Image (tube, rainbow, N blue to C red):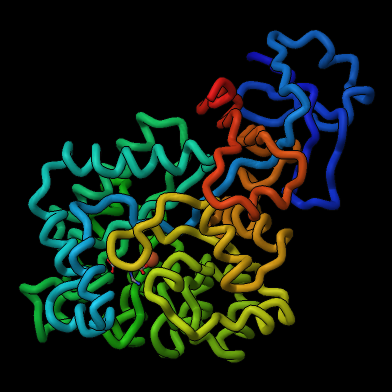
Length: 407
Ligand code: NIG
Ligand code: FE
């Protein structure tokens, strides 16, 4: 047992600007928060810790949570980006065998080691900006062996890097080329072979499906959910990104942790999500990169108090973005979210979208000691700057994971 005292900071326990504690400190026992508050109220029992760290007056927030990424993939799609700049649409490129399928080919052909090293670089970029928990989806393998390879890479990243990683099986991301015209048969493979086997290997924390006219329909999505349910796995959905398919209503029926994208979400979907406690994950990086014009129904989500999370959607096709801080800026400028909404969106609501609301995403007694000390004097700076490095120190599970104090 080890007790450490992190003192001399301004604390934002919920990352909300109106809940700051000045002259504060945090007591960490092993990997958990044991106490936090003003230094002059520190209980006597914590006044002789094993270690003391001086945070030099910095502002401290919970570690950031990136709850929707596709970090493990091969290659890139810069050429496709150029085609889109010349006028081709995302849907047209997907229908011509480009898009997701081109990343599937690249991912299948890479060795597990090569895939690991490509993903590691992206993960480091997130970690250096204060991210302490990340979700990683499969979905660029689309056969048993390649999906297993991607999920093993995600588990290996978790073993080797001081960051919490939740894996999501997204076998139902796109139709692999060998199943063209046979979507139902591919869903049989996902449900009867891939999901049970990968779950038995302990590789899956949650199951996702891309419900869209260029991907899978409602009936196919429901099959995926039913199988996940029978295996005791929570579900989530890429829903209402390019059209309204009613995916959010379906996902809510299965108590989805989250539905994600949601540009075309309607009030029926919002009411279903509210009822189910499903988080709305907004992905402004994909909105920006695809130059979308249809905004998600932010005002309706607010009115119905559906929690909104913000995430990078880091992926090669629609959001080649490894900066959650830049994504936060986009959430405010493009989606008009307020600073408190953005900060809640990358902390407590994102943790809830991962199914861990009581573990991370807030600084509270009993939560993991995941926090970031920033070189800023106003929390709004986290949303305001575009690119300036402000992360000084990242602590994950009570230990320093990133130290940029001398940078
Ligand atoms: O989250 N929406 C589906 N999947 C990804 C896009 C993947 C790709 O184009 O490679 C997304 O936007
Ligand atoms: Fe995505």
